[in-house]
Length: 338
Image 1 (spheres, helix red, strand yellow):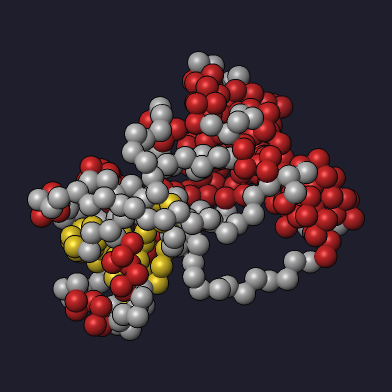
Image 2 (spheres, rainbow, N blue to C red):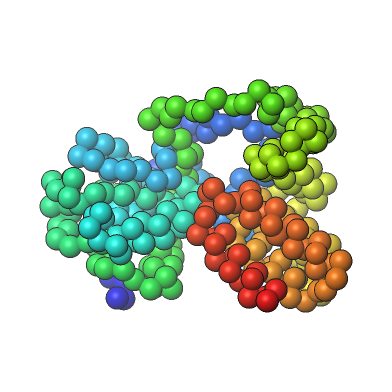
Protein backbone atom coordinates (compact mmCIF):
# COMPACT_ATOMS: atom_id res chain seq x y z
CA UNK A 1 0.00 0.00 0.00
CA UNK A 2 1.36 3.43 -0.90
CA UNK A 3 2.33 5.67 2.01
CA UNK A 4 0.00 8.43 3.14
CA UNK A 5 2.32 11.32 3.84
CA UNK A 6 0.45 14.60 4.14
CA UNK A 7 2.72 17.24 5.64
CA UNK A 8 0.63 20.18 4.50
CA UNK A 9 -0.78 20.94 7.94
CA UNK A 10 2.64 20.74 9.50
CA UNK A 11 4.08 23.02 6.81
CA UNK A 12 1.56 25.70 7.76
CA UNK A 13 2.96 25.86 11.27
CA UNK A 14 5.75 28.19 12.23
CA UNK A 15 9.14 26.56 12.78
CA UNK A 16 9.65 25.44 16.35
CA UNK A 17 12.99 26.37 17.85
CA UNK A 18 14.35 23.32 19.59
CA UNK A 19 16.44 24.01 22.62
CA UNK A 20 16.86 20.79 24.51
CA UNK A 21 19.62 20.60 27.05
CA UNK A 22 22.35 18.17 26.12
CA UNK A 23 22.67 14.95 28.04
CA UNK A 24 25.51 12.44 28.08
CA UNK A 25 24.92 9.04 26.59
CA UNK A 26 25.79 7.29 29.83
CA UNK A 27 27.95 4.77 27.96
CA UNK A 28 31.68 4.45 28.47
CA UNK A 29 33.75 4.55 25.28
CA UNK A 30 37.50 4.07 25.25
CA UNK A 31 39.34 7.30 24.53
CA UNK A 32 41.16 5.96 21.49
CA UNK A 33 38.05 4.28 20.16
CA UNK A 34 35.96 7.41 20.70
CA UNK A 35 38.17 9.36 18.33
CA UNK A 36 38.09 6.56 15.78
CA UNK A 37 34.32 6.16 15.89
CA UNK A 38 33.21 9.78 16.33
CA UNK A 39 29.45 10.17 15.82
CA UNK A 40 27.96 12.17 12.96
CA UNK A 41 24.54 13.86 12.65
CA UNK A 42 23.09 10.93 10.72
CA UNK A 43 23.98 7.60 9.26
CA UNK A 44 23.76 9.16 5.80
CA UNK A 45 26.03 12.15 6.45
CA UNK A 46 29.18 10.42 5.21
CA UNK A 47 27.58 9.37 1.95
CA UNK A 48 26.11 12.85 1.50
CA UNK A 49 29.59 14.30 1.48
CA UNK A 50 29.51 16.43 4.60
CA UNK A 51 27.87 17.38 7.82
CA UNK A 52 24.48 18.99 8.06
CA UNK A 53 24.48 22.75 8.39
CA UNK A 54 21.96 22.64 11.24
CA UNK A 55 23.05 22.22 14.81
CA UNK A 56 21.82 18.94 16.28
CA UNK A 57 20.93 19.08 19.97
CA UNK A 58 21.28 15.87 21.95
CA UNK A 59 17.86 14.80 23.23
CA UNK A 60 17.52 12.37 26.12
CA UNK A 61 15.60 9.22 25.25
CA UNK A 62 15.79 5.75 23.68
CA UNK A 63 15.69 5.15 19.95
CA UNK A 64 12.83 2.67 20.42
CA UNK A 65 10.20 3.06 23.15
CA UNK A 66 7.21 0.91 24.09
CA UNK A 67 4.45 3.45 24.68
CA UNK A 68 1.64 3.38 27.22
CA UNK A 69 -0.80 6.08 28.25
CA UNK A 70 1.50 6.74 31.22
CA UNK A 71 4.52 7.73 29.12
CA UNK A 72 2.68 9.14 26.09
CA UNK A 73 3.38 12.69 27.23
CA UNK A 74 7.13 11.99 27.06
CA UNK A 75 6.71 10.96 23.43
CA UNK A 76 4.80 14.13 22.60
CA UNK A 77 7.54 16.18 24.26
CA UNK A 78 10.18 14.39 22.20
CA UNK A 79 8.19 15.17 19.02
CA UNK A 80 8.80 18.87 19.62
CA UNK A 81 12.49 18.36 18.88
CA UNK A 82 12.64 15.47 16.42
CA UNK A 83 10.17 13.25 14.54
CA UNK A 84 8.46 10.36 16.26
CA UNK A 85 6.98 7.41 14.37
CA UNK A 86 4.26 5.55 16.27
CA UNK A 87 3.69 1.98 15.07
CA UNK A 88 0.48 0.35 16.28
CA UNK A 89 0.65 -3.43 16.43
CA UNK A 90 -1.03 -6.53 17.78
CA UNK A 91 0.10 -10.04 18.61
CA UNK A 92 -2.78 -11.32 16.45
CA UNK A 93 -1.45 -9.58 13.33
CA UNK A 94 1.62 -11.21 11.69
CA UNK A 95 2.21 -8.10 9.58
CA UNK A 96 2.41 -6.07 12.78
CA UNK A 97 5.58 -7.82 13.85
CA UNK A 98 7.12 -7.31 10.42
CA UNK A 99 6.39 -3.59 10.42
CA UNK A 100 7.82 -3.16 13.92
CA UNK A 101 10.97 -5.04 12.85
CA UNK A 102 11.41 -2.88 9.75
CA UNK A 103 11.04 0.36 11.68
CA UNK A 104 13.28 -0.91 14.49
CA UNK A 105 16.02 -1.63 11.96
CA UNK A 106 15.55 1.83 10.46
CA UNK A 107 15.66 3.47 13.90
CA UNK A 108 19.02 1.84 14.62
CA UNK A 109 20.30 2.77 11.18
CA UNK A 110 19.38 6.44 11.65
CA UNK A 111 20.93 6.46 15.15
CA UNK A 112 18.50 8.76 16.91
CA UNK A 113 17.28 11.06 14.13
CA UNK A 114 13.76 9.86 14.96
CA UNK A 115 12.16 7.94 17.79
CA UNK A 116 10.18 4.76 17.17
CA UNK A 117 7.19 4.47 19.50
CA UNK A 118 5.70 0.97 19.47
CA UNK A 119 2.12 0.73 20.74
CA UNK A 120 0.19 -2.47 21.45
CA UNK A 121 -3.22 -1.45 20.10
CA UNK A 122 -5.04 -4.03 22.21
CA UNK A 123 -3.33 -3.33 25.53
CA UNK A 124 -3.35 0.43 24.92
CA UNK A 125 -6.82 0.93 23.44
CA UNK A 126 -7.09 4.48 24.77
CA UNK A 127 -3.91 5.50 22.98
CA UNK A 128 -4.99 3.83 19.74
CA UNK A 129 -8.38 5.57 19.94
CA UNK A 130 -6.73 8.92 20.57
CA UNK A 131 -4.79 8.53 17.33
CA UNK A 132 -7.82 7.29 15.38
CA UNK A 133 -6.28 3.89 14.72
CA UNK A 134 -8.91 1.25 14.00
CA UNK A 135 -6.82 -1.48 12.33
CA UNK A 136 -3.28 -2.76 12.64
CA UNK A 137 -0.58 -2.53 11.63
CA UNK A 138 -0.57 1.22 11.24
CA UNK A 139 2.10 3.90 11.40
CA UNK A 140 1.58 7.51 12.41
CA UNK A 141 4.21 10.25 12.41
CA UNK A 142 4.17 12.81 15.21
CA UNK A 143 5.67 16.23 14.52
CA UNK A 144 5.47 18.85 17.26
CA UNK A 145 2.66 16.91 18.90
CA UNK A 146 0.64 16.65 15.68
CA UNK A 147 -0.19 13.17 14.32
CA UNK A 148 0.22 12.59 10.57
CA UNK A 149 -0.91 9.24 9.05
CA UNK A 150 1.89 7.32 7.34
CA UNK A 151 0.70 3.77 6.63
CA UNK A 152 -2.27 1.50 7.07
CA UNK A 153 -1.15 -2.08 6.58
CA UNK A 154 2.31 -3.33 5.62
CA UNK A 155 3.97 -1.14 2.97
CA UNK A 156 6.73 -2.05 0.55
CA UNK A 157 10.16 -1.32 2.03
CA UNK A 158 10.88 1.19 -0.76
CA UNK A 159 7.65 3.07 0.01
CA UNK A 160 8.51 3.12 3.69
CA UNK A 161 12.00 4.46 2.99
CA UNK A 162 10.57 7.18 0.73
CA UNK A 163 8.06 8.24 3.37
CA UNK A 164 10.78 8.45 6.01
CA UNK A 165 12.96 10.57 3.74
CA UNK A 166 10.07 13.03 3.34
CA UNK A 167 9.39 13.02 7.07
CA UNK A 168 13.01 13.69 8.06
CA UNK A 169 13.36 16.36 5.39
CA UNK A 170 10.21 18.14 6.59
CA UNK A 171 11.42 17.99 10.18
CA UNK A 172 14.84 19.37 9.24
CA UNK A 173 13.23 22.26 7.37
CA UNK A 174 11.59 23.34 10.60
CA UNK A 175 14.68 22.98 12.75
CA UNK A 176 13.69 19.65 14.30
CA UNK A 177 17.17 18.17 14.09
CA UNK A 178 17.57 16.81 17.60
CA UNK A 179 19.33 13.46 17.98
CA UNK A 180 18.39 10.98 20.70
CA UNK A 181 21.15 9.82 23.02
CA UNK A 182 19.66 6.31 23.06
CA UNK A 183 19.46 6.19 26.86
CA UNK A 184 16.34 4.86 28.55
CA UNK A 185 15.18 6.01 31.97
CA UNK A 186 14.10 2.45 32.72
CA UNK A 187 16.97 0.72 34.51
CA UNK A 188 17.96 -2.55 32.92
CA UNK A 189 19.45 -5.33 34.94
CA UNK A 190 22.86 -6.00 33.47
CA UNK A 191 24.09 -9.58 33.48
CA UNK A 192 27.24 -10.18 35.46
CA UNK A 193 30.40 -10.11 33.36
CA UNK A 194 32.32 -13.41 33.59
CA UNK A 195 35.64 -12.76 35.36
CA UNK A 196 37.66 -14.00 32.37
CA UNK A 197 36.57 -10.96 30.34
CA UNK A 198 37.17 -8.35 33.02
CA UNK A 199 40.83 -7.59 32.27
CA UNK A 200 40.08 -7.01 28.59
CA UNK A 201 37.03 -4.86 29.32
CA UNK A 202 38.95 -2.77 31.85
CA UNK A 203 41.71 -2.18 29.30
CA UNK A 204 39.15 -1.29 26.65
CA UNK A 205 37.43 1.19 28.98
CA UNK A 206 40.81 2.80 29.66
CA UNK A 207 41.54 3.16 25.95
CA UNK A 208 44.37 0.62 26.15
CA UNK A 209 43.70 -1.22 22.89
CA UNK A 210 46.93 -3.21 23.00
CA UNK A 211 46.17 -4.40 26.52
CA UNK A 212 42.60 -5.30 25.57
CA UNK A 213 43.84 -7.23 22.55
CA UNK A 214 46.33 -9.20 24.65
CA UNK A 215 43.72 -9.96 27.31
CA UNK A 216 41.12 -11.30 24.89
CA UNK A 217 43.75 -13.28 23.00
CA UNK A 218 44.67 -14.95 26.28
CA UNK A 219 41.02 -15.85 26.88
CA UNK A 220 40.83 -17.41 23.43
CA UNK A 221 44.09 -19.26 23.97
CA UNK A 222 42.58 -20.89 27.03
CA UNK A 223 39.19 -21.47 25.39
CA UNK A 224 39.29 -21.29 21.56
CA UNK A 225 35.53 -21.79 21.31
CA UNK A 226 34.60 -18.70 23.37
CA UNK A 227 32.35 -16.78 20.94
CA UNK A 228 31.96 -13.76 23.22
CA UNK A 229 35.73 -13.38 23.49
CA UNK A 230 35.96 -13.54 19.70
CA UNK A 231 33.43 -10.70 19.40
CA UNK A 232 35.34 -8.60 21.92
CA UNK A 233 38.53 -9.25 19.98
CA UNK A 234 36.90 -8.27 16.67
CA UNK A 235 35.73 -5.05 18.32
CA UNK A 236 39.23 -4.23 19.55
CA UNK A 237 40.71 -5.00 16.13
CA UNK A 238 38.19 -2.68 14.48
CA UNK A 239 39.10 0.12 16.90
CA UNK A 240 42.79 -0.43 16.15
CA UNK A 241 42.23 -0.24 12.40
CA UNK A 242 40.09 2.88 12.72
CA UNK A 243 42.71 4.59 14.84
CA UNK A 244 45.14 4.12 11.95
CA UNK A 245 42.72 5.00 9.14
CA UNK A 246 41.06 8.03 10.71
CA UNK A 247 42.98 9.12 13.84
CA UNK A 248 40.80 12.18 14.50
CA UNK A 249 37.55 10.30 13.88
CA UNK A 250 36.20 13.07 11.62
CA UNK A 251 33.71 12.78 8.73
CA UNK A 252 36.25 14.40 6.39
CA UNK A 253 38.87 11.83 7.34
CA UNK A 254 36.39 9.05 6.74
CA UNK A 255 35.33 10.49 3.39
CA UNK A 256 38.96 10.46 2.21
CA UNK A 257 39.20 6.73 2.93
CA UNK A 258 35.93 6.00 1.12
CA UNK A 259 36.98 8.18 -1.83
CA UNK A 260 40.24 6.24 -2.15
CA UNK A 261 38.25 3.01 -2.40
CA UNK A 262 35.96 4.52 -5.04
CA UNK A 263 39.02 5.23 -7.19
CA UNK A 264 40.36 1.69 -6.81
CA UNK A 265 39.10 -1.48 -8.49
CA UNK A 266 37.08 -3.89 -6.37
CA UNK A 267 39.79 -6.50 -6.85
CA UNK A 268 42.23 -4.21 -5.01
CA UNK A 269 41.38 -5.55 -1.59
CA UNK A 270 42.92 -3.19 0.96
CA UNK A 271 41.11 0.04 -0.05
CA UNK A 272 37.79 -1.83 0.06
CA UNK A 273 38.55 -3.25 3.50
CA UNK A 274 39.48 0.23 4.75
CA UNK A 275 36.34 1.85 3.35
CA UNK A 276 34.12 -0.89 4.81
CA UNK A 277 35.60 -0.26 8.27
CA UNK A 278 34.86 3.46 7.96
CA UNK A 279 31.31 2.88 6.73
CA UNK A 280 30.66 0.42 9.54
CA UNK A 281 32.00 2.84 12.16
CA UNK A 282 29.84 5.69 10.86
CA UNK A 283 26.67 3.61 11.11
CA UNK A 284 26.48 2.53 7.46
CA UNK A 285 26.66 -1.17 8.22
CA UNK A 286 24.80 -2.40 5.18
CA UNK A 287 26.88 -0.23 2.84
CA UNK A 288 29.95 -1.89 4.32
CA UNK A 289 28.37 -5.31 3.78
CA UNK A 290 27.50 -4.55 0.14
CA UNK A 291 31.01 -3.26 -0.54
CA UNK A 292 32.69 -6.38 0.81
CA UNK A 293 30.25 -8.75 -0.88
CA UNK A 294 31.06 -7.04 -4.19
CA UNK A 295 34.77 -7.42 -3.41
CA UNK A 296 34.26 -11.13 -2.68
CA UNK A 297 32.62 -11.47 -6.09
CA UNK A 298 35.54 -9.66 -7.78
CA UNK A 299 38.35 -11.65 -6.16
CA UNK A 300 39.55 -15.21 -5.78
CA UNK A 301 42.01 -17.26 -3.78
CA UNK A 302 43.71 -15.62 -0.80
CA UNK A 303 42.23 -12.19 -1.52
CA UNK A 304 38.70 -13.60 -1.50
CA UNK A 305 39.37 -15.40 1.79
CA UNK A 306 40.69 -12.18 3.34
CA UNK A 307 37.60 -10.18 2.37
CA UNK A 308 35.22 -12.94 3.41
CA UNK A 309 36.89 -13.22 6.82
CA UNK A 310 36.55 -9.48 7.43
CA UNK A 311 32.92 -9.59 6.36
CA UNK A 312 32.15 -12.40 8.81
CA UNK A 313 33.81 -10.40 11.59
CA UNK A 314 31.58 -7.40 10.84
CA UNK A 315 28.52 -9.68 10.76
CA UNK A 316 29.49 -10.85 14.24
CA UNK A 317 29.73 -7.27 15.52
CA UNK A 318 26.44 -6.15 13.94
CA UNK A 319 24.29 -9.19 14.60
CA UNK A 320 22.84 -8.00 17.91
CA UNK A 321 21.95 -4.46 16.80
CA UNK A 322 20.97 -5.21 13.20
CA UNK A 323 19.98 -8.88 12.88
CA UNK A 324 17.79 -8.40 9.80
CA UNK A 325 20.50 -6.50 7.95
CA UNK A 326 23.01 -9.22 8.76
CA UNK A 327 20.55 -11.89 7.65
CA UNK A 328 20.08 -10.23 4.27
CA UNK A 329 23.81 -9.74 3.81
CA UNK A 330 24.55 -13.37 4.69
CA UNK A 331 22.07 -14.46 2.05
CA UNK A 332 23.71 -12.18 -0.53
CA UNK A 333 27.15 -13.55 0.39
CA UNK A 334 25.90 -17.12 -0.03
CA UNK A 335 24.56 -16.26 -3.50
CA UNK A 336 27.97 -14.90 -4.49
CA UNK A 337 29.91 -17.85 -3.11
CA UNK A 338 27.64 -20.59 -4.42
